[in-house]
Image (tube, rainbow over all chains, first blue to last red; front, side):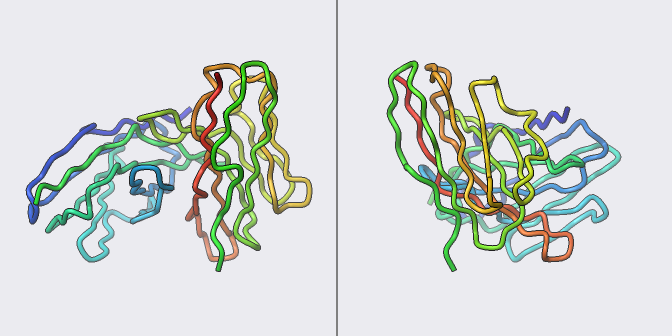
Length: 111
Length: 116
C-alpha cells in the first residue's frame, strides 16, 4: 500500500515568517496530493491540492510543490498569521480512490 | 448549500455494544468515504462507495465493521461488539466526479466514539 510520512510533527513560527511542511510518499502511482487544515475539534478542510502532472501550485499565501521523482511534496505558507495555527495534514491518493494521510503537523504562529 | 453531516456527533458505548454511525453526504455527490481518526493522528481510510457500490473496503479493521449505502446517498457505518480500541473519531467525506477530474473531498464534522 501507500505510506505517507510527514515532517515536522510540530512547528512554531513568528507571525509574518514562512512555514514549510514536507511529506513523502511511497507509491509512484499516486496521482493527487491534497493538504488539509484541521482546527481543534473541527473537520479537515482542503486548503490546496496538486495533481501529479503539475510541479507547483499557488493560492495567495499558500503554495504546494511536488517532486515526482523524489516522491515528495511540500506545503509553503508565507506571511503567517495567528489564524494559520492548526494541524495540517498531507495526503496522497492512489489509483482506485484510496487516500492515505500523513500524521499531521501542529503549526503554531506566535504573534 | 448544506455540507456533509454526521450523526450522532458523540457516542458513548459500553464494550460489546453495537453502534451505528450515519453520514449524509452533499446532495448529488457520487463518492463517499469513511475514515477513522485516532487522537493525534491523521485520518485512516476505511472504505469507499461510488453511488451504492462499495468499491473498496480494504481499510476496515475487522469483520466487526460494516458499511452500507443502499440508495447511493446516506451511508451507515456499523460496528458490532465494540472494543476499546474502536474509540476514535469517525469521519465521513464525499466528493463529486461531475466536475472534470475532481477529487476534492468534503468532510463531515465526525462522530466521536468512546467505548468504555
